[in-house]
Amino acid sequence: MATLSISRRLRRTPFSDGVEAAGVKGYTVYNHMLLPTVFRSVEEDYHHLKNAVQVWDVACERQVELRGPDAGRLMQMLTPRDLRGMLPGQCYYVPIVDETGGMLNDPVAVKLADDRWWISIADSDLLYWIKGIANGWRLDVLIDEPDVSPLAIQGPKSDDLMARVFGDGVRDIRFFRYGIFDFQGRDLVIARSGYSKQGGFEIYVEGGDIGMPLWNALFEAGRDLDVQAGCPNLIERIEGGLLSYGNDMTDDNTPHECGLGRFCNTQTAIGCIGRDALLRVAKEGPVQQIRAIAIEGDRVPPCDRWWPVTSRGKTVGRVSSAAWSPDFGTNVAIGMVRMTHWDEGTEVDIELPDGTRRAIVHEKFWT
Ligand code: THG
Image 1 (tube, rainbow, N blue to C red):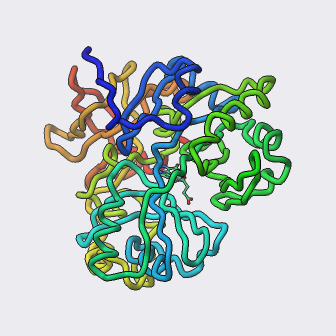
Image 2: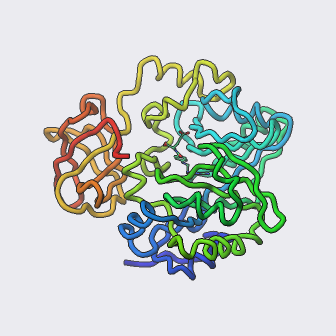
């Protein structure tokens, strides 16, 4: 295999020195930035995540900051989720759609104040779409990428680790809420959220200079908790049905196809771009949708292209993410499946590069 060449266009993060010292074995590129994918092995990392606590460099979840009198109006233009009830202190998972109802990103919106928001983006250059909208509508809002780098603490021992560094107050943070906590004289946003189903927090580290001091403080405080460097885990996130923008869905998919209809209030999200298109597709209903798929046989190879889902030789969907699950003893996968084959228990074939496998479609994910 060839290697991926490193240059300054592929951005390091405030935690990269710690990630390297911890022995990172693999990276991907996300928002033009390094994102670790493996430390010991994907399977060892998976077991450790489910049993202990990990510190994840997810600085690549870049923030788009909206600041000014029109920040709230702009935010509602970007998403079909109704934001009227959202208060400072809350985070919302928000589909972002274009004028056709196609998914542009699936970020977490953080409401800091009525006139100040962070949009914690997935892997697409959303900044340019947002600047274009704001300029086209001549909105009174400043838009930029601030020096904010999320550090996730994930796993069952997250509360214990975080309490040692930030105090017992972190235990009271509710799911998708945040509080402000001090580290070395700096106020940091800390939310109970993260890209795993094992529980934990995300620290929005404001100011790259405190990245390594915070990283080191967490590892020193958690020595007896078996704290390890980790990263979003492929197996665990498939078991949990956490979607990956660019892999599992693109701008060709509506939120409803992605199973994100529960995060859309298209009727009441007045001003949302793509609202008319979404009202049309919501009335008809999607003709394909994200599903959990159990692929039979032994360990599948890495899914680096869509694998056709077929039935009697005809294509009825695609698999976009797949991995062997030690806990469930089967290959777990995420795919987009046509209506004719999306019911629970439907048998399908998956065309892998090295041959055809039988598989079962499920309506619910594993965790
Ligand atoms: N945290 C933050 N920013 C992010 C991610 C994150 N940006 C990139 C990427 N992840 C965006 N995608 C997701 C996908 C899923 C979730 C969050 C961001 C998620 N979903 C939960 C679920 O589906 O079970 C909960 C959603 C809810 O109930 O509101 O957490 O992880 N900061």
